[in-house]
Image 1 (cartoon, rainbow, N blue to C red):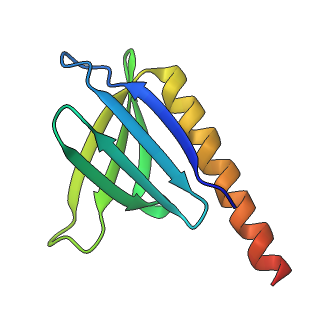
Image 2 (tube, helix red, strand yellow; image 1 turned 90 degrees about the vertical axis):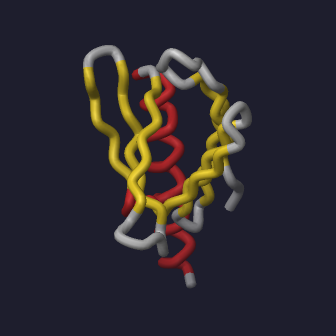
Amino acid sequence: MLARHLDCALNDVSHSKAHIEVNPTGVVAVEIHESHQSLRTEFDSLRFERKGNVTELVGETPNARKGKTWRLPLCHRDARVLQECIDDASEELEILMRDL
């Protein structure tokens, strides 16, 4: 079980760089270096919303009061690659749990 990493530019006016780590334990962590922002959530608290030429990654920070929702604008290609990483990690975790 290895974490998967993805680096992408946010599809907004800032074009900040985001480093996304998909952990097979069911956690996604995002680091946005330019704004010194760290985001973390579980697979179950993530969704993708397609809006024109942008796909937003929408997540809720766990253990935050009233659930803090955050949005990252991604290009469609990066969102698709991220979804594949999450799907692969979920499948890997299911196989591991079945084998135990």
